[in-house]
Amino acid sequence: MSTVSLGGILNPRAEGVRFFLARHAPSPDLAYFVERHWSVRWDLEEPYPQETLPQPCVNLVFEEAGARFYGLGTKRFSVMLSGKGWVFGTKFRPGAFRPIWRRPMVDLVDRAAPLRDVLGGASDGVWEAVREAGDDDACALAVEALLRATLPQEKDPEVEVVASIVKLALDNPGMGRVEELAAASGQSPRALQRLFRRYLGVGPKWVIRRFRLHEAAARVAEGGDIHWASLAQDLGYFDQAHFIKDFKDQVGQTPTEYARRCNVRTSLP
Image (cartoon, rainbow, N blue to C red):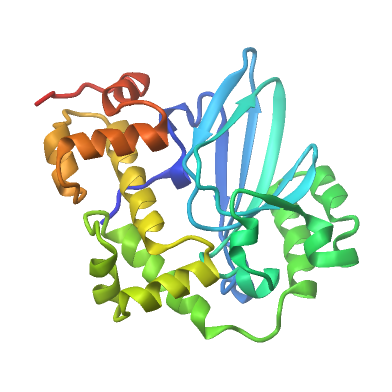
């Protein structure tokens, strides 16, 4: 079972110290589209760089600069938190944004689209309502009212298929090959490629790779003695060298450097 925590946040020990993260379940009638609502708030004397490895999904984010749909991010995301601020977001289930977007999902990968460009005039005033809301519950009410008024009425059955396969990859980070994920999900590798490209904008190989690194970063941040060769094997890497390269490419630091950042003791091979 995966130990991924805080949705891909790097150095999660900063949560509760540098910033405060809250998560809220959506109303049951919106659970087909929405995985959760979330908020981040901070009040800092000195700036703090917060980084995440984005998950394979779309987020609707309300911030001081406005409201935008942020597509799947293939790169590490970094933002400098300073002063006092807040962000409120709605995370869509993997694949569930495609019926809303109605365009190739690759068009939104590593990009953002203004709220009004996607949902039209029905969204007018919603950013102001969220900004002026007194708490997360009021923010969620404003967002959910908008979604009820604009989401497609018919449900695409492929959304459930995509979500279940993504969860399979999340829960089995040692499953390192597309062929393994395809067999476990009852799909052919080619069919799985087409499905992911259509509903996520990336292929299954990218999703597998990202979840393996989520798992690795989460295990490092948990603390305790870590043996890199054993961790690489657990996550299905060919050898330790491939694991270290992949980790540095995505996280921006070697596993040892990241462990130091998280104040974790490690056991080297």
